[in-house]
Image (cartoon, rainbow, N blue to C red; front, side):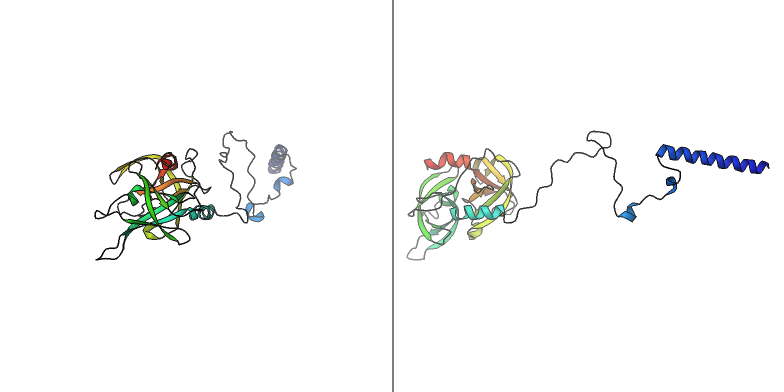
Length: 280
């Protein structure tokens, strides 16, 4: 009899406890024992409780929305720049004149940017401003069409390392120059020129730094744009452009232990270029 009373008391206690738990959860005692769907069964994890930003345990706010996918037909910005700026960039060649003992000899060159449609072309002074064996070299310019024309130096400034060439040709596609005031580190940078004589070569990178001052090969350069767009010997005098196809600098120099691109290229700022070009 005593054992029966103990069992009855325990059963009543358990029933009362189950009822209390069910009441706290807002369900019936029967529902308390039904299985809940698991993440494995449904294929979805249980939803986390909604939290407001700034409350303890809340997820950090998203810095930027995921960029939309490119729209169909939208052109790659580098392709756009190449098409817009490419026709305004020329190859510059230097030759020793023909003598009785030797034919005309190619000795090097660089690149240039058409500044005015009536035949004025910007390049670097170090490309065209030196004598070879005491002789002024013959300078030619190769247009994007492949036409090669003889050029003369009509102005040069060693301090800024800029020079102006003139060819007998009109109707040329002049490049659009713009100020660098709105440039930001990380912006797209596209270099166009003739590295190692390979005309119309296009490389891309970013603006790595602005307003650099560097001492390179006996010259002090001011207000340089630094870029990791590949620049090599022969790029000197070519264009560095932004994503809008506007020239923001004249490619001029590199820092490299090997003499070829190491991701440290420099261009003379277009603000410097526009300040001196009309005086050359």
